[in-house]
Image 1 (spheres, one colour):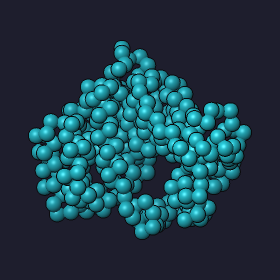
Image 2 (cartoon, helix red, strand yellow):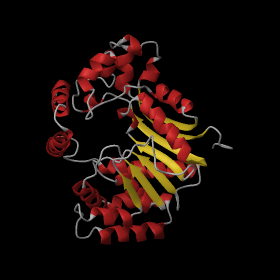
Image 3 (cartoon, helix red, strand yellow):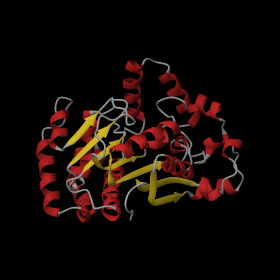
Image 4 (cartoon, helix red, strand yellow):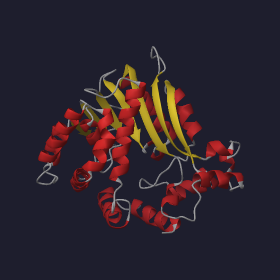
Length: 322
């Protein structure tokens, strides 16, 4: 699909009332888009990576309270974190998007691929606990998961789903969570709102807690249109880009990795660790002189070409970081 066709569809959807637009867009995604064949495996691996990072840079997730920003259509990451020993996962979303049929499909995918996923999960948890929780999940979901079954399933997995809920105004006490995380969510949030979310996250984070945030900073239109550079969207002014993608179905803030690091500092957070992915095509395009709007000039090509990062953060008043 050409990127401008997707843009036109999304902007047309955005003109409809929310009660019509969101269900209709869901059906489009389910039949023609990313929800036709969801990448559950990617999200399962992300959960294992989060558990691994918290084991390396904190003291693991066993029995801990974790907070996810941006649930989406399923609870893949919270579900796997529960399998890996988390005590409770609170997951919040500004818009109620969770769908039982996607949750059910995710669980079937996990069960069918257990021989592949168990070795991925085993290093992060006591194996007896992993097997016991997997058996409990299998039993709970054995008859399928419908909308009426979803609340019971979430309770069984110690997942506290809150939506609509504003991650910048949480109904949680100070210092009440061990870890605060998001997976490919922040790129869809305006800078000022990211700052508010992170400041609120810092408030509810325990003094020795950790944040983990993974963001995809490439142009998402390039996922459907291979003719595009991952940096295609940097050629437009803010006004032009808002006309193209300033809708709730595609909004991207276009921030580069270093912009996020600056926001982290402004939120009172310290960078403990960061893994960055520099995209070869993005770097080649940048070095070849791909058009850039003046707002995006003046940065080294290698920094613009970081199209994904995973960060571990702590409060800047933490006694020690590792």
